[in-house]
Image (cartoon, rainbow, N blue to C red):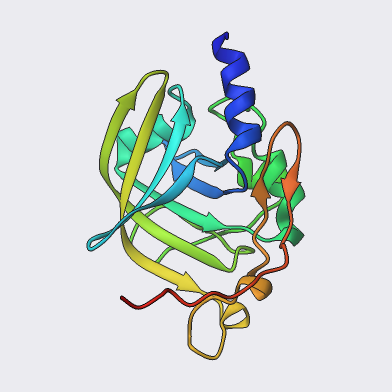
Length: 187
């Protein structure tokens, strides 16, 4: 099977995939915003998030140059903007401006977060690891901003209130699904 066929097979099979909507800034000051659906938690102590860049895209270059980025968590109401920022813009293009989003100053890092996104994790580069045709980008979370309207009574994000879309195969996006609860069994 060709590499492009495996890509399509993997992305249609490993679903749903959460989206890291990564904001970064070039060494020259140009803002970049791009969604990455190869995204997960890599460590909780210290808190480290990981996303995968296929090739050396603007986010990779910016993080390599500055050592900072923000993982924004988008919502179903922002799905069009998230999708629009996946276009292959020239590195001189500011995606915030192009798609009509508001850059909001972060608390710790110099890269802005997406004001419209309810959750933002400010990150400092921990490690970039090349694997095949991709780069795993790991960032240590140095600050989290979470809007109250997506929180449950226990102070954590409520899945239904957050309504974060996911990527599926082809051009399909996943919307907030029905959930079920299962307590972990005790030994």
